[in-house]
Image (cartoon, rainbow, N blue to C red; front, top):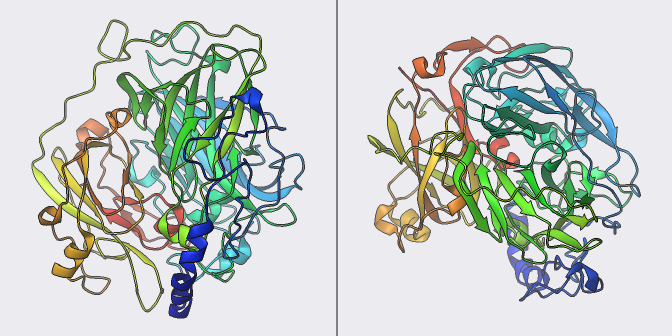
Length: 601
């Protein structure tokens, strides 16, 4: 967040009045009875909009923008074993009433990039080229953040990371393996993994938050013999135009209608902000779009591509939908639900049935997750709305929701049972005072990224990681290369834990067990979290217990501990090794909440 202790005192003084007035807007618009728009019970706000009735002076606010006047755009698909993607500067219009905003994009897009489609066990060679011009957010680059440089303003570095990919270390998008404008690198993706919705995005050290917010992100879909993507797929899932990507983001626009990355005037421009919530919903690069849907079943591939917020998604009429998969692939069976909580980096594979809507009737995709603490202190409120779906008179897909997705005839094998760990590791998540970066400094294990005190799990073993979140905010934890199985989450007393286990200065490992300080039972994961996941939300003041099986080189078909040389970028020629794990709030991973690890033989 901010850079002076005096500002921290000011925030505490203003917190009471700001939070008292910060009530989010209801997703349902009472003025539109045809939309089934009864306000959500307990809602304090009378109407839908980018504004709440209280607009905090400590946050920036987008101008009023008309809703549902833009169609939800489709995202083009590229397939094949030889692909090429260029990161380039562009101009993008987020809404018909907004001017063209400078943006970054992959390929021929003006924002985001094409969906890349791969086949299981068929290697994809992806040539990535950096052709970026002056940075969209040149004035927001903070060269005091680890890895960022003054040169990033005019010649921004970039590196492509396949999030969720089982990828050789040299192709994984190491944050130090960045390319300068004019440089290229050939990534090798073996695709030796089940069908799943992955995504690719920028991962440049120190400027990931700015590059991704500018537009460097899109989906990467792995297909297999069951989840083929064709209308005759063995699982009986909606396909073709009925399988729809939903890349969810939240933005702030300035008074002139240009997209901006800053969310508060409290932090001076050019200083790391720590993450802020937007007040405008963006889906597939468009503000508050409308999608016309047939009255039948759809499959949505949802990704939280936001920078900060966890979202609790629901439909404005509270209708039921089904989660059929998450980060790493399909669940054993569809999970019926009326809400879906999804944190930055997570994906969800969802079936939605619009057959009960009448022609012309609409339903909105909404959010009511409270804003994280630091943003709430500034007066930010939940962004309540992403898009609208309007039913046409077309009949649509009526194949029905499958009873099972795994373990049956013409289905992939059932999920493996939870393995037994051979080792338990405690890892900590902290945001603390530090004289160099007051008032917030983000760390894992109380260490900085370049620390040599890294985790070194052994190939072929199973470990239990107890992710001890000592902060008042949720942090989505992403471990590159592998997946996790969630055992559960358990609240603990952070004040008692930190009092009896004093934290040393940053740079010395701090990972004491929190088991003595638990305050309640181990709560099981949500049913849709049952499968393997590459990103897990570690809730505030909680221990999130996960299992990780570390694969062997033989299983992977490559050496996960191989060394490789960084391209010319900021660390050109340096010898790199291993992978990283980090918080997937982009501002946090940029500012030390990211560590390396090696997977030893």
